[in-house]
Image (cartoon, rainbow, N blue to C red; front, side, top):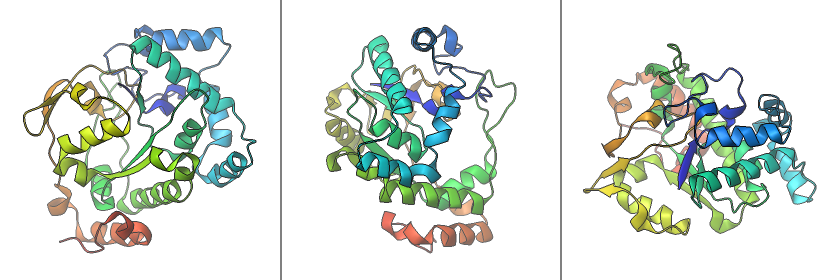
Length: 280
């Protein structure tokens, strides 16, 4: 398996991590992405103009129309075809069969679901919206070592939770319909952290990957190797043995007002994911 991070940032001319790959090199110098970008250039694909192609048709608000096109078998295939080519190249150059794209936007997941030459599985990971709001409200993280001090943008709890509601609702209501029933799964962050090894093995089985290939250590640890991530959480640069444990700092540090506003904003689907409206 090869984790490529949030692929949507590949098209961003103002890449906040200055185009730095998770392996520590610039994307153009990376042994994987350097070859992928060269292929794009040879195919006459403008890397940064591609973002316009993506945003013109695959934004979240356009998903109902894209689903209509998919249902009638007349979807515009330019961006999905490009994704299919990239996944194929990464698979070839990394010598893996499974490529993990952790882009968080449902429009990109929908495009990937119809990418030619791919067998797309969508693993929809959800976290308590109050925890997500706390992370965006309070914590400051550098994008990367080449980011010139640029940090991840903070968001208010209400704004963050509105995004949480929109992304999760439209993914459940529409995006999951684009793949076969056995190709879509929901996973709560809290359940993953409760039994990490068991859940990771189950995901491998779902992907038809031998669970024995996982770098599991001890009862709750994993050994992280170098990845070729184009963007994502700054932890993508971390390697070595890491303990998987639940981050519950928000339960004692998130203010009452932010806690209530987040819960109320997320209330239409909060219980669908098994989260109580009131968290003690």
